[in-house]
Length: 302
Image (cartoon, rainbow, N blue to C red; front, side):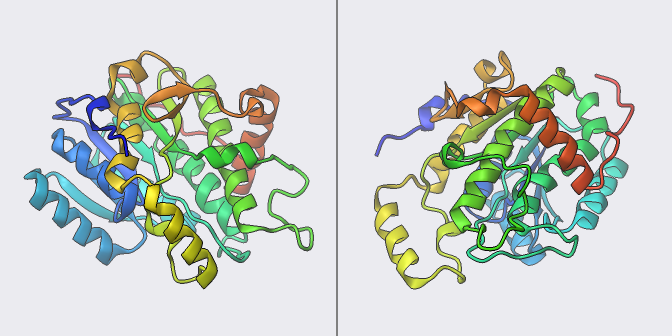
């Protein structure tokens, strides 16, 4: 297995504030740890408050950075996202790094309390909503970045505007829904860069990582077996976080915008990811579904 560690620049992030969603485990945890090692103030945005607190304590212990904390954030709840953004706005004037890392694979179709198909909400709508609600603080940072963790699985994704929530009988399949939302992550990235050119935003594939996303309780035994064999050749979570951190801090990533990265290198995503008409329409529909009719105003660049 080839290590990617040497490809990640070491930066002094003293005075920088970073949010990492889904940071109590896996890639998100190691992303937060690396940013903390670079002296950033890191907020772990986690659905499970107990696990989030334990993860924050672990990062403080291993890095010596006491500026690490965990805040509750449930991406399956728009109300939780609004509460998180409101709290952040009250406590911090600016935001330097937003890492939209959290995601899920649902074996069965589920509907959130907001009436939205779960995979669509957690993987796409909620990161879009969170980012938009934090725009005032992002705009006030000197060199803000938004990093969206996508997947090579986006190549299998399609954008079916007539069936975004898999309402048609028999249309929901777990990996299809996942792939579709990972394609949405890249379209979101490109549209955000057009709307907010002062914010560097990138999407990335972290690699095939030995993450607990593949071994959760709802996975059937045969899939757990397949994944366990497959992950024998997978990257560990530290290596899986390398490309995220590269996009978040490197000078090379800071010199470009709206790129798709794999193994700390720019690569080309699926062609439709560059389709402006599709990205614009997806953004407009997503705003409506997320109840976000207008992006926040204000927030001058530092």
